[in-house]
Structure formats: structure tokens, C-alpha cells
Length: 129
Image (tube, rainbow, N blue to C red; front, side, top):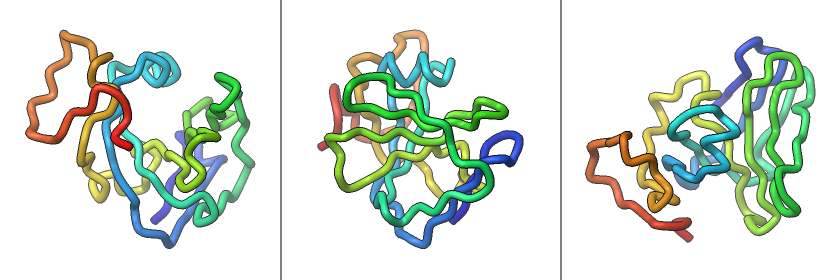
């Protein structure tokens, strides 16, 4: 699978299977993306190859790095030092996001009450792990 930013300057590719796919409702991700909810896929750290311009890194906390395109600003990925297995890539960066439908919601306790996603997916107050 492959993905890229809005302008195409930052690209990624992976041959790995998607470990998980979810909606995230946490306030940090909402603010970072300027969106009421976002979606992620998890892929093993070593399976993602970046090409084109390297993503820029913003340290949003002591343990979190947020990767983004330095040209157009598209959020590309989230790395948490506590998750030594997977990098969290934004589903919207996929060339074909239809292939990665979310399977659950995380940080649902923080969801915006005016946004009602009507599905039967599991909802976790915090993380799913």
C-alpha cells in the first residue's frame, strides 16, 4: 500500500498487513488535524519506507512525534514512544483509503457530542490496548 500528502512531496509505502484501523476522538488529534475526528492505520515501524521529501517532525509531547509535510502541512503519521510496534499513519493519506475502514473507536470518552457516527464498532474510552 502507498500514501502521500496533499501536494505529493512526502510519500510512503509499505508491504505490511494493516495491524489495526481506528477512529481517534482524542482532543490532541482533533486539534492537530483541525477535524472533529480522525482515522489511523497501524503498520510496523520498520515496514514504512518514506520517499520524496522526508516528513518534518513536531514533538507534541515528551513521548509523541507528529510527522507532517513541510510543504503543504498535511499530517502524515503519529509516533508514540510507548508503542514500540506500530507507527500510526493517517488513513486519509492512503492512495486508496477505502481499503482501510476503521474497526473500532479510541478515546471515545472525548468525542464531540454533536458528532454522531452511527456504526456498531467497539468504542473504547481510552486506547484499545
